[in-house]
Image 1 (tube, rainbow, N blue to C red):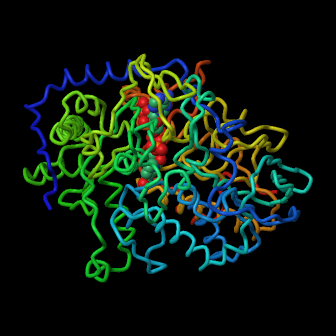
Image 2: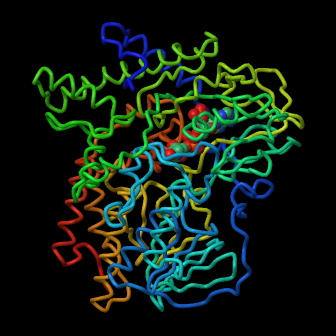
Image 3: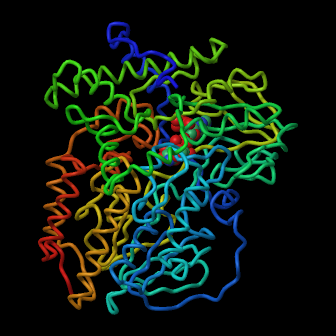
Length: 615
Ligand code: NDP
């Protein structure tokens, strides 16, 4: 198999100033005043996109009322890893709450046709060395990931700790008992000494805020709740035979849509892809796991692979270091590294950044040329080309995406001029002034990732010490110690991207954050304390250190087309001038992942829980 189907252009072949101007134009015409507010919350008439569970029947149960050492909120990878670490540290008095009917988080809810992990599964799947499990492919199937997650839960007896089909609506700190009172819509009252917020980054689906969205009389669903009853087929056999006489529209062309489009194109009678911003799509080069390679792996291989992936995707390779991953995530650094190794020349960080800049334009141009090489209709090809910097949107790969647009039943509808689909009607949608009748509209419109916390989390209230709401506490931006704890919220621990390090393997972030959290809980308990909270001084010092060492990427991210990556084009301030949540990956520890992990390890090894007040 050749690595690339289209060659990389040289720097001389491309006009970088002209491309910069084109990128700017493409961004500007997509900027909306509405920002995050353009999306529809999955409530009221749209609650079916979030509430309920199409996969597991709900079993009636009596409300649970009890005291526990730890309440873990969420049974996706972060909750599972926290559960495993709690078990390993002998902290067995905990429960894990999830509104799904089983473990898995996003891998529970997402079952759409074509779903695979779109980055290296040997990195992404946690604990491979401990469990001895090996993914069947480099980009493995969604159901394989879910089944693997559930096998870990069986191995560590997490099922007996689980409270499924349970939705939390209130979290309140009770100073008298030094406990969190966790209330659920099912009438439970769990009084947790500690709470671990493992509630996920992509937990709440959002709908595109298209005018008239309530008027459409046909069938409608979100990709996170795939309706196989309607489409036919199943997760493991995605033959969507019930669509053969159906006209289907798909809203969105992000990472989800890229995996899905070939299936909808193949099976629908007529298929309309409503695109606001195109993704960049490389060849997949997926491969089955070679048993000989798997057998040859030495202890420590996963950590080594993840470190290599992280350098390739987000930092830079060391001189002579090979790329173990070789996919779209590592292409820019791999190409640069190859060129430097050949010349035996290794620039300093500034020089590297300048060279990386040029490589970014070259790789994106290669990806645009791929479109021309595959898509026969020139006008369609032009619309499918991504004009923005590499990683402004999640880079994707799929071997059948572009080719699907060569099918006569597949119609690409560009809705960028109107900053989204113009309107839905009873019978279909209006785009660029024309009405199209369809039977079904599927929303691949993403999740609440960088919206306001109350939208993202969905709890009616989350109130800490002295009646402070987390929604007010962090309204002007995050303030944390180590990205994990915050003042006024004793015994509460946050997993996610708040103010910590960033590793390119999402699950590895969760694992390291869980490790730190479980250490604090264990030490607090061992010292006989009922509560632990960062001091205001320690938090201020951490935030200051974080800011002082931060790499300012605001300009880069501001130049990107709007999306949840850059808070819909408003990465730095909200409409009131407050520095809000910045953007998805913006709050990242400047000195890098290794430095962040070392800081946490050193802190733990110090053994005196510096900066925390125990009571
Ligand atoms: P995204 O948020 O990435 O994409 C949403 C899509 O909907 C975009 O194309 C957006 O356009 C479009 N959209 C929104 N509003 C409108 C509108 N009014 N009219 C037309 N189009 C509209 O969601 P995804 O579900 O694709 O991906 C979310 C995340 O899920 C990924 O970034 C990734 O983190 C994760 N994921 C992970 C996978 C994995 O294998 N690990 C696979 C798939 C997803 P625009 O870009 O213009 O805003």
